[in-house]
Amino acid sequence: HEEPKPWDPDHLRTRFVQALSEMYRTEVPLYGKLVDVVNQVDTTTLQSRGQSLNDLPSRFQLERHGAIRLGTQQEMRMISRLFAVMGMFPVGYYDLKMVGFPLHGTAFRPQTEESLRKNPFRVFTTVLRPDLISSPKVREMATSILSTRQLFSSRLIDLIDQAETSALANLTAQDANNLITESLKIFKWHSRSSVPLETYLTLKKEHPMVADIVCFPSAHINHLTPRTLDIDAVQAGMISQGLPAKDRIEGPPKRKCEILLRQTSFKALEERVTFAGDADHAVDGTHTARFGEVEQRGAAVTRKGRELYDALLAKAVGRSEKEDKDSDKVLKEVFAEYPDDWEVLRKEGLVYFRYRVAEDKVPVAGAHKLEESVHMDRLLKEGVVTCEPITYEDFLPFSAAGIFTSNLGGEKDGGTERKLQRTEEESKRSRVQLEGLLGRKIPSEIDLYDELQTDSVKECQAFLGLSEI
Ligand code: OOG
Ligand code: NI
Image 1 (cartoon, protein in one colour):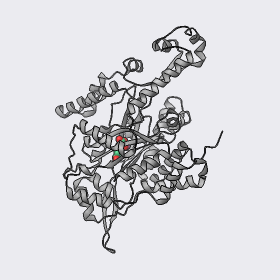
Image 2 (tube, rainbow, N blue to C red):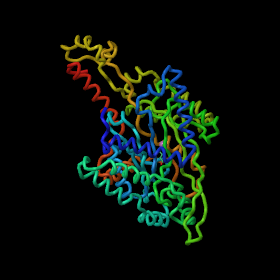
Image 3 (spheres, rainbow, N blue to C red):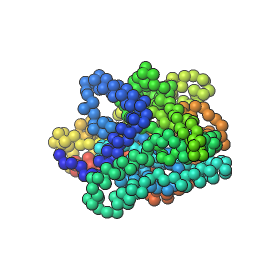
Image 4 (cartoon, rainbow, N blue to C red):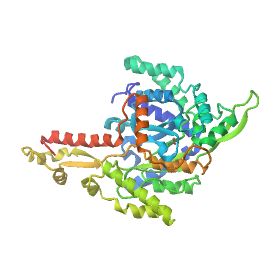
Protein backbone atom coordinates (compact mmCIF):
# COMPACT_ATOMS: atom_id res chain seq x y z
CA HIS A 1 0.00 0.00 0.00
CA GLU A 2 1.68 3.17 -1.25
CA GLU A 3 1.30 6.55 0.46
CA PRO A 4 -0.36 9.00 -1.91
CA LYS A 5 1.89 11.85 -3.08
CA PRO A 6 0.94 15.14 -1.36
CA TRP A 7 0.24 16.77 -4.72
CA ASP A 8 -1.81 13.95 -6.15
CA PRO A 9 -4.97 15.77 -7.31
CA ASP A 10 -7.31 13.04 -6.03
CA HIS A 11 -5.59 13.08 -2.66
CA LEU A 12 -5.73 16.89 -2.44
CA ARG A 13 -9.42 16.83 -3.30
CA THR A 14 -10.16 14.34 -0.53
CA ARG A 15 -8.13 16.29 2.01
CA PHE A 16 -9.86 19.46 0.95
CA VAL A 17 -13.41 18.13 1.32
CA GLN A 18 -12.49 16.67 4.71
CA ALA A 19 -11.22 20.04 5.88
CA LEU A 20 -14.21 21.83 4.41
CA SER A 21 -16.62 19.46 6.12
CA GLU A 22 -14.91 20.04 9.47
CA MET A 23 -15.01 23.78 9.02
CA TYR A 24 -18.67 23.76 7.99
CA ARG A 25 -19.61 21.57 10.94
CA THR A 26 -18.35 24.24 13.31
CA GLU A 27 -19.89 27.07 11.29
CA VAL A 28 -23.32 25.48 10.85
CA PRO A 29 -24.07 23.05 13.70
CA LEU A 30 -27.30 21.97 11.95
CA TYR A 31 -25.11 20.57 9.16
CA GLY A 32 -23.55 18.26 11.75
CA LYS A 33 -27.00 17.22 12.89
CA LEU A 34 -28.07 16.50 9.32
CA VAL A 35 -24.94 14.41 8.73
CA ASP A 36 -25.79 12.45 11.90
CA VAL A 37 -29.33 11.78 10.61
CA VAL A 38 -27.85 10.61 7.29
CA ASN A 39 -25.44 8.24 9.05
CA GLN A 40 -28.25 6.74 11.13
CA VAL A 41 -30.52 6.32 8.13
CA ASP A 42 -27.76 4.75 6.02
CA THR A 43 -26.78 2.38 8.81
CA THR A 44 -30.40 1.24 9.21
CA THR A 45 -30.88 0.92 5.46
CA LEU A 46 -27.77 -1.21 5.16
CA GLN A 47 -28.75 -3.36 8.14
CA SER A 48 -32.04 -4.11 6.44
CA ARG A 49 -29.97 -5.36 3.49
CA GLY A 50 -27.71 -7.38 5.77
CA GLN A 51 -24.80 -4.97 5.18
CA SER A 52 -22.83 -2.33 7.08
CA LEU A 53 -21.25 1.04 6.23
CA ASN A 54 -17.99 -0.77 5.47
CA ASP A 55 -19.66 -2.59 2.60
CA LEU A 56 -20.23 0.64 0.72
CA PRO A 57 -17.75 1.62 -1.98
CA SER A 58 -15.16 3.93 -0.40
CA ARG A 59 -16.38 6.95 -2.36
CA PHE A 60 -19.49 6.95 -0.14
CA GLN A 61 -17.42 7.64 2.97
CA LEU A 62 -17.27 11.35 2.45
CA GLU A 63 -19.38 12.06 -0.58
CA ARG A 64 -20.36 15.71 -0.74
CA HIS A 65 -21.23 18.51 -3.07
CA GLY A 66 -20.94 22.17 -2.27
CA ALA A 67 -22.06 25.39 -3.91
CA ILE A 68 -20.44 28.79 -4.16
CA ARG A 69 -21.44 31.98 -5.98
CA LEU A 70 -18.67 34.16 -7.35
CA GLY A 71 -18.74 37.82 -8.26
CA THR A 72 -16.40 38.35 -11.18
CA GLN A 73 -14.91 36.67 -14.22
CA GLN A 74 -11.44 36.90 -12.65
CA GLU A 75 -12.68 35.00 -9.61
CA MET A 76 -14.22 32.34 -11.84
CA ARG A 77 -10.99 31.95 -13.79
CA MET A 78 -8.90 31.64 -10.66
CA ILE A 79 -11.22 29.13 -9.00
CA SER A 80 -11.09 26.97 -12.12
CA ARG A 81 -7.29 26.93 -11.83
CA LEU A 82 -7.49 25.99 -8.15
CA PHE A 83 -10.04 23.24 -8.75
CA ALA A 84 -7.89 21.83 -11.57
CA VAL A 85 -5.07 21.34 -9.06
CA MET A 86 -7.56 19.21 -7.08
CA GLY A 87 -8.58 17.22 -10.17
CA MET A 88 -11.89 19.00 -10.69
CA PHE A 89 -12.93 20.29 -14.10
CA PRO A 90 -16.03 22.04 -15.42
CA VAL A 91 -18.86 19.74 -16.51
CA GLY A 92 -22.24 20.93 -17.74
CA TYR A 93 -23.47 24.46 -18.29
CA TYR A 94 -26.18 25.80 -15.99
CA ASP A 95 -27.99 28.94 -17.08
CA LEU A 96 -29.81 30.09 -13.99
CA LYS A 97 -31.45 32.92 -15.90
CA MET A 98 -33.86 30.16 -16.83
CA VAL A 99 -35.01 30.07 -13.22
CA GLY A 100 -34.82 33.82 -12.66
CA PHE A 101 -31.35 34.28 -11.15
CA PRO A 102 -28.71 36.61 -12.62
CA LEU A 103 -26.11 33.82 -12.55
CA HIS A 104 -24.64 31.10 -14.69
CA GLY A 105 -22.10 28.45 -14.00
CA THR A 106 -20.86 24.92 -14.12
CA ALA A 107 -20.08 22.03 -11.81
CA PHE A 108 -16.40 21.43 -11.12
CA ARG A 109 -15.89 17.73 -10.60
CA PRO A 110 -13.61 14.81 -11.44
CA GLN A 111 -14.23 13.53 -14.94
CA THR A 112 -12.61 10.11 -15.10
CA GLU A 113 -14.09 6.91 -13.78
CA GLU A 114 -11.00 6.36 -11.64
CA SER A 115 -11.06 9.79 -10.01
CA LEU A 116 -14.79 9.58 -9.42
CA ARG A 117 -14.28 6.24 -7.72
CA LYS A 118 -11.75 7.79 -5.34
CA ASN A 119 -13.81 10.81 -4.41
CA PRO A 120 -16.56 12.40 -6.50
CA PHE A 121 -16.57 15.77 -4.66
CA ARG A 122 -18.16 18.46 -6.81
CA VAL A 123 -18.76 22.16 -6.44
CA PHE A 124 -21.66 23.84 -8.18
CA THR A 125 -20.02 27.15 -9.04
CA THR A 126 -21.85 30.16 -10.38
CA VAL A 127 -20.75 33.65 -11.27
CA LEU A 128 -22.78 36.84 -11.23
CA ARG A 129 -23.84 38.24 -14.61
CA PRO A 130 -24.03 42.01 -14.14
CA ASP A 131 -25.70 42.30 -17.57
CA LEU A 132 -28.77 40.65 -16.04
CA ILE A 133 -29.07 43.25 -13.28
CA SER A 134 -31.78 45.53 -14.58
CA SER A 135 -30.97 48.70 -12.65
CA PRO A 136 -27.86 50.50 -14.00
CA LYS A 137 -27.27 52.04 -10.59
CA VAL A 138 -27.27 48.67 -8.82
CA ARG A 139 -25.13 47.13 -11.55
CA GLU A 140 -22.54 49.86 -11.15
CA MET A 141 -22.65 49.50 -7.37
CA ALA A 142 -22.13 45.72 -7.53
CA THR A 143 -19.28 45.80 -10.02
CA SER A 144 -17.48 48.57 -8.26
CA ILE A 145 -17.61 46.81 -4.86
CA LEU A 146 -16.47 43.53 -6.39
CA SER A 147 -13.61 45.13 -8.30
CA THR A 148 -11.58 45.53 -5.11
CA ARG A 149 -12.35 42.17 -3.47
CA GLN A 150 -9.40 39.81 -2.95
CA LEU A 151 -10.84 36.32 -2.70
CA PHE A 152 -7.54 34.53 -3.22
CA SER A 153 -4.55 35.20 -0.98
CA SER A 154 -1.29 35.97 -2.77
CA ARG A 155 0.17 32.86 -1.17
CA LEU A 156 -2.56 30.75 -2.71
CA ILE A 157 -2.03 32.32 -6.11
CA ASP A 158 1.70 31.53 -5.83
CA LEU A 159 0.96 27.92 -4.96
CA ILE A 160 -1.43 27.55 -7.88
CA ASP A 161 1.18 29.08 -10.20
CA GLN A 162 3.77 26.64 -8.91
CA ALA A 163 1.48 23.63 -9.19
CA GLU A 164 0.79 24.55 -12.81
CA THR A 165 4.31 25.27 -13.90
CA SER A 166 6.86 23.33 -11.91
CA ALA A 167 7.15 19.61 -11.56
CA LEU A 168 4.79 18.67 -8.74
CA ALA A 169 7.62 16.70 -7.20
CA ASN A 170 9.27 20.01 -6.30
CA LEU A 171 6.39 20.96 -4.09
CA THR A 172 6.57 19.85 -0.51
CA ALA A 173 3.98 18.35 1.78
CA GLN A 174 4.03 21.67 3.62
CA ASP A 175 3.10 23.45 0.38
CA ALA A 176 0.16 21.07 0.02
CA ASN A 177 -0.94 21.85 3.59
CA ASN A 178 -0.76 25.54 2.81
CA LEU A 179 -2.82 25.08 -0.30
CA ILE A 180 -5.61 23.50 1.75
CA THR A 181 -5.47 26.16 4.48
CA GLU A 182 -5.40 29.05 2.02
CA SER A 183 -8.21 27.52 -0.06
CA LEU A 184 -10.51 27.16 2.94
CA LYS A 185 -10.43 30.94 3.34
CA ILE A 186 -12.38 31.33 0.08
CA PHE A 187 -15.21 29.20 1.45
CA LYS A 188 -15.28 30.54 4.98
CA TRP A 189 -18.21 32.46 6.46
CA HIS A 190 -17.66 36.09 7.51
CA SER A 191 -20.16 37.65 9.85
CA ARG A 192 -18.83 41.07 8.95
CA SER A 193 -20.16 42.54 5.74
CA SER A 194 -17.81 44.61 3.62
CA VAL A 195 -20.55 47.17 2.91
CA PRO A 196 -22.89 49.42 4.92
CA LEU A 197 -26.40 48.15 5.66
CA GLU A 198 -27.95 50.59 3.23
CA THR A 199 -25.90 49.23 0.33
CA TYR A 200 -26.78 45.69 1.37
CA LEU A 201 -30.49 46.50 1.34
CA THR A 202 -30.31 48.18 -2.06
CA LEU A 203 -28.60 45.13 -3.55
CA LYS A 204 -30.98 42.76 -1.80
CA LYS A 205 -33.97 44.61 -3.16
CA GLU A 206 -32.63 44.00 -6.66
CA HIS A 207 -32.13 40.30 -5.92
CA PRO A 208 -31.15 38.50 -2.69
CA MET A 209 -28.49 36.58 -4.62
CA VAL A 210 -26.81 39.83 -5.65
CA ALA A 211 -26.51 40.91 -2.02
CA ASP A 212 -25.25 37.49 -1.01
CA ILE A 213 -22.50 37.60 -3.62
CA VAL A 214 -21.42 41.21 -3.35
CA CYS A 215 -21.53 42.10 0.34
CA PHE A 216 -19.00 39.71 1.88
CA PRO A 217 -15.24 39.33 1.72
CA SER A 218 -15.41 35.59 0.90
CA ALA A 219 -17.50 33.35 -1.36
CA HIS A 220 -18.85 31.49 1.70
CA ILE A 221 -19.96 28.01 0.78
CA ASN A 222 -23.74 28.12 1.05
CA HIS A 223 -24.36 24.40 1.58
CA LEU A 224 -22.40 21.16 1.74
CA THR A 225 -24.56 18.24 0.78
CA PRO A 226 -24.12 14.65 1.95
CA ARG A 227 -25.43 11.76 -0.12
CA THR A 228 -27.81 9.26 1.44
CA LEU A 229 -29.19 5.85 0.54
CA ASP A 230 -32.74 6.75 1.56
CA ILE A 231 -33.82 10.34 1.25
CA ASP A 232 -37.41 9.70 2.29
CA ALA A 233 -36.15 8.39 5.63
CA VAL A 234 -33.81 11.39 6.01
CA GLN A 235 -36.70 13.76 5.31
CA ALA A 236 -38.77 12.02 8.00
CA GLY A 237 -35.76 12.02 10.35
CA MET A 238 -35.18 15.76 9.85
CA ILE A 239 -38.81 16.47 10.69
CA SER A 240 -38.81 14.25 13.77
CA GLN A 241 -35.59 15.89 15.03
CA GLY A 242 -37.09 19.33 14.61
CA LEU A 243 -34.86 20.47 11.74
CA PRO A 244 -36.66 23.10 9.63
CA ALA A 245 -37.12 20.80 6.62
CA LYS A 246 -38.50 21.90 3.30
CA ASP A 247 -41.90 20.29 2.78
CA ARG A 248 -41.17 18.20 -0.29
CA ILE A 249 -38.36 16.34 -2.01
CA GLU A 250 -37.25 17.75 -5.39
CA GLY A 251 -36.61 15.61 -8.43
CA PRO A 252 -38.20 12.36 -9.57
CA PRO A 253 -40.61 10.53 -7.26
CA LYS A 254 -39.48 7.52 -5.24
CA ARG A 255 -38.94 4.59 -7.61
CA LYS A 256 -37.56 1.06 -7.61
CA CYS A 257 -34.89 2.10 -10.11
CA GLU A 258 -33.66 5.46 -8.87
CA ILE A 259 -32.70 7.92 -11.61
CA LEU A 260 -30.89 11.26 -11.54
CA LEU A 261 -31.09 13.05 -8.26
CA ARG A 262 -33.58 13.58 -5.43
CA GLN A 263 -32.87 16.42 -3.00
CA THR A 264 -34.35 18.08 0.00
CA SER A 265 -33.09 20.74 2.36
CA PHE A 266 -33.56 22.58 5.57
CA LYS A 267 -34.31 26.27 5.50
CA ALA A 268 -31.57 28.84 5.40
CA LEU A 269 -30.43 30.23 8.70
CA GLU A 270 -30.96 33.84 9.57
CA GLU A 271 -27.45 34.82 10.61
CA ARG A 272 -26.20 37.83 12.48
CA VAL A 273 -24.08 40.15 10.40
CA THR A 274 -22.28 43.33 11.31
CA PHE A 275 -22.38 45.88 8.54
CA ALA A 276 -19.64 48.38 7.91
CA GLY A 277 -20.29 51.88 9.16
CA ASP A 278 -18.20 54.91 10.00
CA ALA A 279 -15.50 53.65 12.30
CA ASP A 280 -17.46 53.19 15.52
CA HIS A 281 -20.92 52.96 14.03
CA ALA A 282 -21.02 49.42 12.77
CA VAL A 283 -24.64 48.23 12.50
CA ASP A 284 -26.02 44.82 13.36
CA GLY A 285 -28.34 43.05 11.00
CA THR A 286 -28.98 39.61 9.55
CA HIS A 287 -28.42 37.72 6.33
CA THR A 288 -30.10 34.57 5.06
CA ALA A 289 -28.10 32.43 2.67
CA ARG A 290 -26.75 29.21 4.07
CA PHE A 291 -28.95 26.17 4.20
CA GLY A 292 -28.69 22.40 4.56
CA GLU A 293 -29.26 19.97 1.76
CA VAL A 294 -29.19 16.21 1.35
CA GLU A 295 -29.45 14.09 -1.75
CA GLN A 296 -29.95 10.61 -3.08
CA ARG A 297 -28.25 9.82 -6.37
CA GLY A 298 -29.60 7.47 -8.99
CA ALA A 299 -28.66 6.50 -12.52
CA ALA A 300 -27.48 8.83 -15.27
CA VAL A 301 -30.06 9.02 -18.04
CA THR A 302 -29.45 9.33 -21.77
CA ARG A 303 -30.66 12.33 -23.84
CA LYS A 304 -33.83 10.37 -24.52
CA GLY A 305 -34.17 9.59 -20.82
CA ARG A 306 -33.62 13.23 -19.92
CA GLU A 307 -36.19 14.44 -22.43
CA LEU A 308 -38.72 12.06 -20.94
CA TYR A 309 -37.83 13.24 -17.43
CA ASP A 310 -38.16 16.93 -18.36
CA ALA A 311 -41.43 16.34 -20.20
CA LEU A 312 -43.00 14.40 -17.33
CA LEU A 313 -41.81 16.93 -14.76
CA ALA A 314 -43.33 19.78 -16.77
CA LYS A 315 -46.55 17.81 -17.12
CA ALA A 316 -46.69 17.15 -13.38
CA VAL A 317 -46.04 20.80 -12.52
CA GLY A 318 -48.73 21.93 -14.97
CA ARG A 319 -51.25 19.45 -13.65
CA SER A 320 -50.74 20.11 -9.98
CA GLU A 321 -51.08 23.87 -10.59
CA LYS A 322 -54.29 23.38 -12.56
CA GLU A 323 -55.89 20.76 -10.37
CA ASP A 324 -54.56 22.14 -7.12
CA LYS A 325 -53.80 18.61 -5.99
CA ASP A 326 -51.00 17.37 -3.78
CA SER A 327 -47.99 17.74 -6.05
CA ASP A 328 -46.26 14.56 -4.86
CA LYS A 329 -49.32 12.50 -5.71
CA VAL A 330 -49.51 14.02 -9.18
CA LEU A 331 -45.77 13.47 -9.67
CA LYS A 332 -46.12 9.81 -8.80
CA GLU A 333 -49.07 9.38 -11.18
CA VAL A 334 -47.37 11.18 -14.06
CA PHE A 335 -44.09 9.29 -13.62
CA ALA A 336 -45.89 5.96 -13.96
CA GLU A 337 -45.02 6.54 -17.63
CA TYR A 338 -41.27 6.33 -16.88
CA PRO A 339 -40.20 2.65 -17.07
CA ASP A 340 -39.09 1.35 -13.67
CA ASP A 341 -37.20 -1.82 -14.54
CA TRP A 342 -33.44 -1.80 -15.25
CA GLU A 343 -33.66 -4.14 -18.21
CA VAL A 344 -36.41 -2.07 -19.82
CA LEU A 345 -34.53 1.16 -19.10
CA ARG A 346 -31.45 -0.36 -20.74
CA LYS A 347 -33.17 -1.78 -23.78
CA GLU A 348 -35.10 1.42 -24.43
CA GLY A 349 -31.87 3.44 -24.17
CA LEU A 350 -33.11 5.58 -21.29
CA VAL A 351 -30.28 4.92 -18.80
CA TYR A 352 -26.49 4.59 -19.19
CA PHE A 353 -24.79 1.38 -18.11
CA ARG A 354 -21.25 0.32 -17.36
CA TYR A 355 -20.53 -3.08 -18.92
CA ARG A 356 -17.94 -5.55 -17.61
CA VAL A 357 -16.74 -8.99 -18.65
CA ALA A 358 -17.44 -11.58 -15.96
CA GLU A 359 -14.00 -13.12 -16.07
CA ASP A 360 -15.07 -16.41 -14.48
CA LYS A 361 -17.45 -16.88 -17.41
CA VAL A 362 -14.78 -16.38 -20.02
CA PRO A 363 -14.54 -20.06 -21.01
CA VAL A 364 -18.12 -19.61 -22.18
CA ALA A 365 -17.03 -16.44 -23.90
CA GLY A 366 -14.47 -18.45 -25.81
CA ALA A 367 -17.38 -19.93 -27.69
CA HIS A 368 -17.84 -16.56 -29.36
CA LYS A 369 -14.21 -16.17 -30.35
CA LEU A 370 -14.73 -16.81 -34.00
CA GLU A 371 -17.90 -14.89 -34.40
CA GLU A 372 -17.76 -11.45 -35.96
CA SER A 373 -20.34 -9.91 -33.77
CA VAL A 374 -22.48 -10.89 -30.83
CA HIS A 375 -25.42 -8.95 -29.57
CA MET A 376 -24.99 -7.45 -26.09
CA ASP A 377 -28.35 -8.88 -25.00
CA ARG A 378 -27.02 -12.38 -25.64
CA LEU A 379 -23.77 -11.77 -23.72
CA LEU A 380 -25.75 -10.45 -20.78
CA LYS A 381 -28.16 -13.35 -20.92
CA GLU A 382 -25.31 -15.84 -20.88
CA GLY A 383 -23.70 -13.97 -17.99
CA VAL A 384 -20.48 -13.38 -19.92
CA VAL A 385 -21.00 -9.67 -19.47
CA THR A 386 -22.65 -7.90 -16.55
CA CYS A 387 -23.85 -4.34 -16.38
CA GLU A 388 -24.70 -1.75 -13.77
CA PRO A 389 -26.30 1.68 -14.09
CA ILE A 390 -23.83 4.58 -14.12
CA THR A 391 -24.31 7.02 -11.22
CA TYR A 392 -25.53 10.52 -12.02
CA GLU A 393 -22.78 12.88 -10.80
CA ASP A 394 -24.38 16.18 -11.80
CA PHE A 395 -27.23 18.55 -10.95
CA LEU A 396 -30.80 19.45 -11.91
CA PRO A 397 -31.33 23.20 -12.25
CA PHE A 398 -35.08 22.98 -11.68
CA SER A 399 -34.54 21.18 -8.40
CA ALA A 400 -31.98 23.84 -7.51
CA ALA A 401 -34.61 26.47 -8.27
CA GLY A 402 -37.09 24.73 -5.98
CA ILE A 403 -34.55 24.78 -3.19
CA PHE A 404 -33.47 28.35 -3.85
CA THR A 405 -37.07 29.51 -3.84
CA SER A 406 -37.92 27.75 -0.61
CA ASN A 407 -35.01 29.64 0.92
CA LEU A 408 -35.89 33.07 -0.37
CA GLY A 409 -38.96 33.17 1.79
CA GLY A 410 -41.24 34.29 -1.04
CA GLU A 411 -39.70 37.73 -1.45
CA LYS A 412 -40.94 39.02 -4.75
CA ASP A 413 -39.82 42.63 -5.08
CA GLY A 414 -36.88 43.84 -7.12
CA GLY A 415 -36.38 44.51 -10.77
CA THR A 416 -34.49 41.40 -11.86
CA GLU A 417 -36.83 38.97 -13.53
CA ARG A 418 -37.45 35.89 -11.42
CA LYS A 419 -39.96 34.07 -13.56
CA LEU A 420 -39.21 30.95 -15.52
CA GLN A 421 -37.99 31.86 -18.98
CA ARG A 422 -37.10 30.04 -22.14
CA THR A 423 -33.73 31.23 -23.22
CA GLU A 424 -32.20 28.57 -25.43
CA GLU A 425 -30.57 30.80 -28.04
CA GLU A 426 -29.32 33.15 -25.40
CA SER A 427 -28.09 30.27 -23.30
CA LYS A 428 -25.91 29.14 -26.16
CA ARG A 429 -24.30 32.55 -26.27
CA SER A 430 -23.72 32.83 -22.55
CA ARG A 431 -22.31 29.32 -22.50
CA VAL A 432 -19.74 30.28 -25.12
CA GLN A 433 -18.85 33.29 -22.98
CA LEU A 434 -18.25 31.13 -19.95
CA GLU A 435 -16.16 28.73 -22.02
CA GLY A 436 -14.10 31.65 -23.29
CA LEU A 437 -13.56 32.74 -19.74
CA LEU A 438 -12.48 29.28 -18.59
CA GLY A 439 -10.35 28.81 -21.69
CA ARG A 440 -11.83 25.40 -22.37
CA LYS A 441 -14.97 23.76 -23.69
CA ILE A 442 -17.44 22.68 -21.04
CA PRO A 443 -18.36 19.11 -21.88
CA SER A 444 -21.99 18.18 -21.51
CA GLU A 445 -22.50 15.69 -18.69
CA ILE A 446 -24.50 13.46 -21.04
CA ASP A 447 -21.57 13.20 -23.47
CA LEU A 448 -19.32 12.08 -20.61
CA TYR A 449 -21.72 9.30 -19.55
CA ASP A 450 -22.08 8.27 -23.17
CA GLU A 451 -18.32 8.00 -23.49
CA LEU A 452 -18.08 5.97 -20.30
CA GLN A 453 -20.66 3.51 -21.55
CA THR A 454 -19.08 3.29 -25.01
CA ASP A 455 -15.60 2.74 -23.56
CA SER A 456 -16.90 -0.03 -21.32
CA VAL A 457 -18.48 -1.79 -24.31
CA LYS A 458 -15.19 -1.44 -26.22
CA GLU A 459 -13.28 -2.94 -23.29
CA CYS A 460 -15.59 -5.96 -23.29
CA GLN A 461 -15.25 -6.25 -27.04
CA ALA A 462 -11.45 -6.19 -26.90
CA PHE A 463 -11.34 -8.63 -23.99
CA LEU A 464 -13.58 -11.09 -25.77
CA GLY A 465 -11.84 -10.60 -29.12
CA LEU A 466 -15.04 -9.70 -30.88
CA SER A 467 -15.22 -7.37 -33.84
CA GLU A 468 -18.51 -5.95 -32.67
CA ILE A 469 -20.94 -6.11 -29.80
C1 OOG B 1 -26.51 26.57 -6.21
C2 OOG B 1 -27.54 25.54 -6.03
C3 OOG B 1 -27.30 24.33 -6.92
C4 OOG B 1 -27.92 21.93 -6.31
O1 OOG B 1 -27.83 21.01 -5.49
O2 OOG B 1 -28.70 21.88 -7.26
C5 OOG B 1 -27.06 23.12 -6.12
C6 OOG B 1 -26.55 27.70 -5.21
O3 OOG B 1 -27.29 27.66 -4.21
O4 OOG B 1 -25.79 28.64 -5.44
O5 OOG B 1 -26.22 23.05 -5.30
NI1 NI C 1 -26.87 21.65 -3.80
